[in-house]
Image (cartoon, rainbow, N blue to C red; front, top):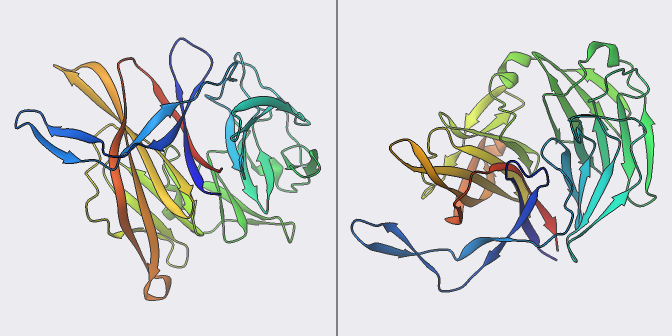
Amino acid sequence: TESCLYVCLQFSPDPNSRWFTLCRKPNRTITTDTKKKKKEKSSGHVLVPIAIPNSPQAHWQSVVTVGSTIYAIGGPIDDSPSSSVWVLDCHCHVWRKAPSLHVERACPAANVFDGKIYVAGGVNSFTSSNWIEVFDPKTQTWECVVCPHAERFSRSVDRSAVVEGRIFYMFFMEGMTYDPKEDRWEAMKMMSSIDSGWPWLAYCVVDNVLFACCDSEGLRWYDFKKHCWMEMKSLKGLPEFARYSHYRMTDCGGKLAVSWKKYVGVSGINKSKKIRCAVIAIERRSGGEEVWGTVEWHDLVLTLPTSFELVHALSAAV
């Protein structure tokens, strides 16, 4: 098996999402400077649309992968919370219904730990017994997880990630961690340092390292020992991110995959939009105090004439 990148786009006013997958076409060239007619050999990677009938809405759903399966969890669907769970088999590209959540949720936070999916937040009337529940794909069952600190939380989770055996849940200037193996909750310390630099629109975890991306700072990683965001070393060949671009990041087979949409326009009018992608190999050095990135490739992977939103980017084993 190998990891394959999947990208979900939303085209207004169509409520249903459209999915693309990254493929490679050999001997492909792109023009990098139309004025000088200068061409360079591209990586050959392109995003190809997938013909998936009746694809469910995924704009505000929480979407995760377990193996070769993509899960779209909760709502809102038609502006209402939902308990629905949809499953996409990445081998045959067919959606099917999975067992529903115990409670209806809107914009929940979903994280995969030890092959199970932990879904938290998004409940209007939440208690310690329904704020979080876990799904076991092997048994196809949901179970509630008791959270004794639920009264301290808000309805929605701003950001969440799994790092070194703990699920991090972030709220406004507050955070908690949950250790599923020990069934232990702890309040986060040094909140200001991590909260100030963790943009919810672009972050992911690769090899137990939390990465984030934004226009002004580029790619960074969080040092949990020093409680601060650090710059990545090297990244030779990575183009500068365009201002106001929209990013998505994911772990793609142990490598960092960054996708971003770049506006193309004349006199401020957007005539078309493009998506670029970069795949970066990660290496920790100096006893884990430095993170180096080697850009394996970056390329223009999709050009579309109509407006769209880059909703999700994630990888599945196929």
